[in-house]
Length: 343
Ligand code: HPA
Ligand code: ZN
Image (cartoon, rainbow, N blue to C red; front, side, top):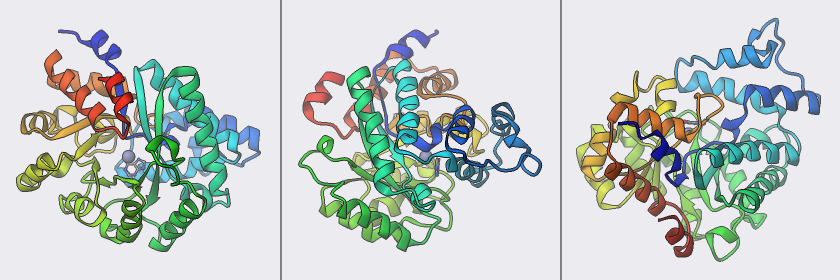
């Protein structure tokens, strides 16, 4: 049966979305012109000839690292507060069209502070987008500040100090805080979660939520590390959990949420096809998960495309989808009032 209409209308929560991953080739060229940023020379990097040729470059990635290289190269066009606001708004407008009601979104301050863009400019721009999304679209949201794990730990510690000293974690509820949670992204293998133990311990003390990428390319020790060393409440991706049944039982017992990104996993060659993902295994075992878009400007689609790809591969019924939607509401960092609106 075709559940497309049902899936389109299903109220969705998104938990794994990189705002910088919404930087489309069109927006790259638009912001480069606006800010007078020189893009890579098309003679040596032909992809930078036009938005169309850049789009073409994004049609194939060898792996996570290949994608990240493209991703970090494009970032330089983001300069002013309004640029971050524009990028965030493009996400929320697309998410709204896909039926997203609540979004907890990642951003990478170090991708910008390393280029001398002030931390406060980045957060202020993204907050502008969040506020506008709530006002104009009724979408509630949270910001999740990610550390880039391939950079020195001291750079993450400095980023943590910017957030703490700037009062970005202040406020007595998740929605009163400019930043609600910590995340951890970029190259996984060789950069284990244990490196970031101290920043996460401080977050826990401050009542800041915690998640981290793990088990996308890394083995299950990268998942147990998120739980043990980082006090993670979620694991982003976590697909390789299926290789460790004992750990899987722990994830079920501790009600850890996996934030799955099926189309991303295909684009970055984690699997050849969505049908190879252990989504049915997780569902049957009682592992909670949400379905998300990761970097929609690169991976051919926002959240609804991901829902539809899962449906095409697994042909779930209404009952399964209602459970998936319910788990994604219950796994959201929202108060009881908002939760009961969404359920
Ligand atoms: N994994 C690691 N880092 C990332 C990703 C991802 O899927 N997307 C953007 N940065
Ligand atoms: Zn991601």
